[in-house]
Length: 75
Image (cartoon, rainbow, N blue to C red; front, side, top):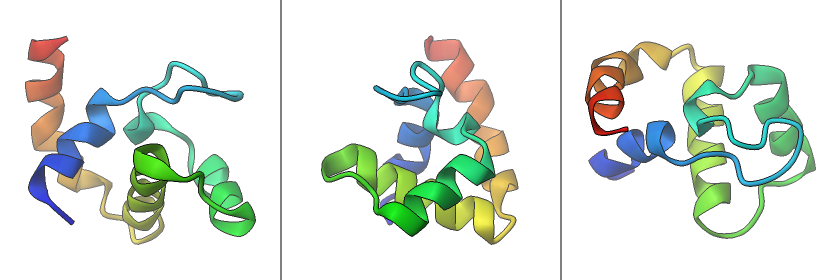
């Protein structure tokens, strides 16, 4: 994992599906678990979804808290 990928979880929006437009970091765990079972899409979105699933599954969501202030300042 590269450090900038954590920021990307806050900046990149889900481009399709039920949660279209929501930041990857704000997707519910059940949705991330579904992708883990069914397969992550290819490309950056898939990598970010897999990373967010790993963070969520291991209870590491607090890692993103310091970045949330940074993200809201740039939006």
